[in-house]
Image (tube, rainbow, N blue to C red; front, side, top):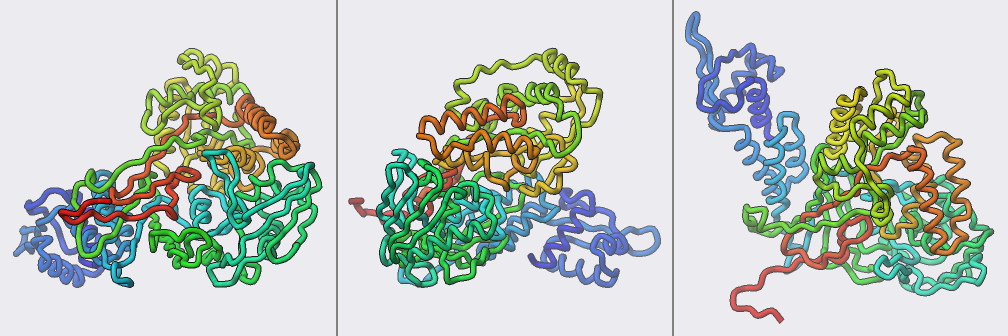
Length: 598
């Protein structure tokens, strides 16, 4: 951002009256020097520059008793919008995002600039071919600093890794079956203790080498060497035998009817054995390769030697926005040499999809406090009640949750508690006016629910203190919070998602429960992999009952997720976690007048 714009913003914000246009306001060189943190001499240079840019009018006081005045000629909104459009027109996306993240940009002004960003996202020419490159820009509220298949945690990371890497097999939700991927065929013995996979020939990594069975073995050994939080899933592998470059055999110490689910997971994304793994430059066999990765942007380029169907989009840029912004994903297109219509309705369409999972409260047993009292946790479940939450906050909260799985929640009988019910349960719990600390991330929906619960608690006689923390930085609040807001979104392979939630050592559940509680969960799911599909479903439900009935987890509402996409974007296939599968997207240009679509 230009220095004169920065100076203008600081003066306008420091004046206390930035929106009183064309009205002389009293000011002094000394006061402006404090606002701008510079010398009075530099203030005069800055004021002269702002006058040249026709942003202000400066009238110095003449003689004793005459005050200097400053007149703002343009509003902060207009100045920032013009600056943002200029930056985007030059392809300076990072600087545009930084501008909207300035502390002076708040409330309606931030929403206005976000709308401008959505409309103007990246209109610059790409002429590497005769027709130019097809580019998609995705706006995300996630900052991606590194990508590691061994320690992936968020749904967004899993989505990205799924574009960069491939697995031996893939799960197809529509048929509840497994499809060939890097392995074109597999065999399993009757006891489900031995699996043989036949690998495709000629599959290349992004660095050019052909994939072999050695890479598959290396991938699994790396998970163990890195002490991946997902190692529980692989604990029964007794041996790995290479039967040639394109055949590999896994021998298991116990029957495992869930093994294909495990091998289709993001943790088993095949990595090359001859490259030292770099989370800043991940190398796989997937449809896209990484060309840039920073906290601001992840840039992916189509991999021309992809073993499947080459993506139709040549490049995808995923830009991270300031943390406070909405979680609606924006899929925008650059277009060479032209600006699209200003109406958002002309540009975007929406895709809504109910997510598998829900938002919920987790009890922190790692901290001493009243939350260890089961009756108090039951009182909390009445306060954080799904029906009341949906009725009073609404929004993307579509149905009350009694499980991560919507079909199980629909079987529950919800009855909204009265204020007297809540007060009676609080009295039984022995609550005596203590502060109860609720921790939430800076997501707007979590903050809304925390503030709603604080108001609801006040009317029932309970005092909540709110504590904001950085997403996934549980160490910041583990010794300070009594309850923690969290959200779980499951993969399309929901059995894998559920069992991974129960056993993955890196998630909030494992961070907040005691070792004795985790041992109960581990014992409960110990036979999971040996069971058939129906029995596994029953076991997962019983384990979830354990968390709910003991109020270790307090369920809120199932959520509706939304993605905004450009009307010229086709091939819309919602993949796991509700993200659009970018490897199947393509851009459809409008036909010239008189053309007939065939």
